[in-house]
Amino acid sequence: MGGPVAEDTVGASVQVDREVPGLIVKFGAYPLHHGGVGAIRSLGRLGVPMYAITEDPYTPAAASRYLRRAFVWPTTGAEDPGQLVEGLLRIGRRIGRPAVLIPTDEEAAVLIAEHREELAGPFLCPSVDPGLPRRVASKQGLHELCEEHGHGLASPAAAFPRSYEEVVAFADTASFPVVAKNREAFLRRSRPAVGGTTRIATRAGLLALARAWGPDPGVILQEYLPREQAEDWIVHACFDRDANPLALFTGVKVRSWPPHAGMTAHAYVVDNPELADLAARFVKRIGFSGVADLDLRFDRRDGRYKLLDFNPRMGAQFRLFESAAGVDVVRALHLDLTGRPVPEGEQRAGRRYVVENIDLPALLAYRRGGYTTPHAPARASGTELAWFAGDDPLPFLTMLARFVRPGARHLCQLWRDRRRGTPK
Image (cartoon, rainbow, N blue to C red; front, side):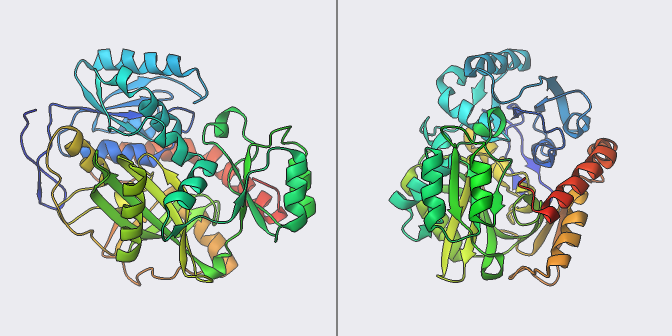
């Protein structure tokens, strides 16, 4: 495919094909998604025509100057897969030329992998084993993959109860606190057992929750890794069809919201060759291709990295990472799927990423808890804001308009619930 060379934001030449658009694919109602805005800007600044699926016409993504068109399509993520595939094909016909699919959630990533042959005409997507994204997005599937292929990359000790009685048996021998998560990614919106990562302090608290989980709890019960003895690391990467890394980055999560268990609010790029090697070898063994976002916790008690999440899609904070050649994981994906070489280059260490609307409450919460993050540099070499950009201000203003009143109420309620010990 032909196309001119475009200059990226740090001055290096990145040979993108401007004849191949990108489509941001999201299922479910989460209009304030800074990752989608970041992907639109990242490729849009290189001249790639960008399209996006949005809940309504007034999302921050729809307001970006780099978006050619928003396809308004409200979904829950729990629709029949055939219905979602047909909707994507309709959008493909309206775009009128092959486009690179860029999923922003597990539902989209799994659907695209499992229906790649049906989508292959109007869309470009990685040649991944159709069942692998679903497996890595599953907490149980990821745990099993770590046990089979980890070889240095561990998974926290876990149990997968299939009845209330098995929860009771677990509670009788477990060391508390423990963590509960939904076992499968798709349960998050259709019939979630818990609202997210939920720390449970006592046996009585676990059994009280379990009574509402039904005959099949649908949860993973996992050992709690105390933050005083741990470090939160992230890996973002893009892999080719042979599971070789085209771009691979490491960093530390400084703050998240809700505290210690939610999305990244503040992070730094930090070189970690050991972790990069562990992640690359694990992905090679399982044969994954495409973009991945990994969350890990380094447990200082045993000196091991423990893989908490493997998201088979771009992470919301992916713009934290960029190489000296101007490549991030979304650019690497577009280059690879359009047959272009991905320029090599070291990651730009010391860069900082801040999500403006959630970092302030996260900062207050972390200061109250007295927690500091090891390895975070004293001074950033540069800061990437999730929402504000001088060349594209409308997404930031749209975020403010949608966030300030309902968002502030939601953040306050989350914080009050957390202080009272209410499960999320």
